[in-house]
Length: 211
Image (tube, rainbow, N blue to C red; front, side, top):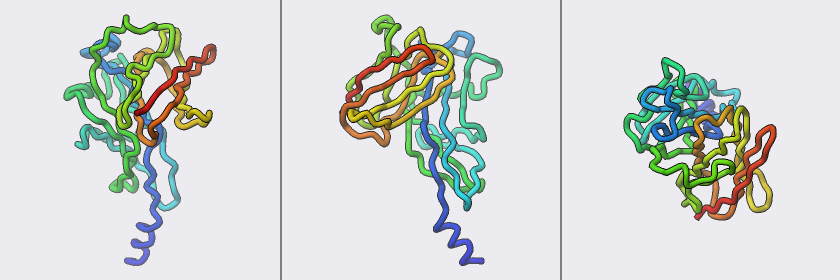
């Protein structure tokens, strides 16, 4: 029995979640239908699973302190009562990570982490008919914060593309009513990239520099 347990431990594949993305930073950009303007949508992609481990859910951490457990690939407050997590913005700013949970007790690592803040930016500074990267250049380890054009709605994709044209990251989103999208620079390196936003009707592209 001891040998069997050891073997399972060696060959365990506790794969992390993929494509962690955060829409909306509440307050200024929030939907007024949300409690205290706390509209947001935190989503991620289910990890690749293995034969030796059973994916049972996800642990959400704020500043490395356990916040919530969920069996879904999202946590949100999108203007419909009651919101799933009304206390999401209670202690901003904070770093947020999501870890996959296997066999009820084993956790994956967290490949991505996102810094959640509230904005104090005058949206009039930006042209709302184009894709805007709010801070550019961005330092490695910080968020890539994207302001979505007002003309975008329903389903759309955000791709991070290298100078060589290689697809580095891909995010599929349901809607843009929160306007602001945060993705991490984890697993990227310093250099020049292109942020490409595709809808069923339009394509928007903006150059990104990571220092």
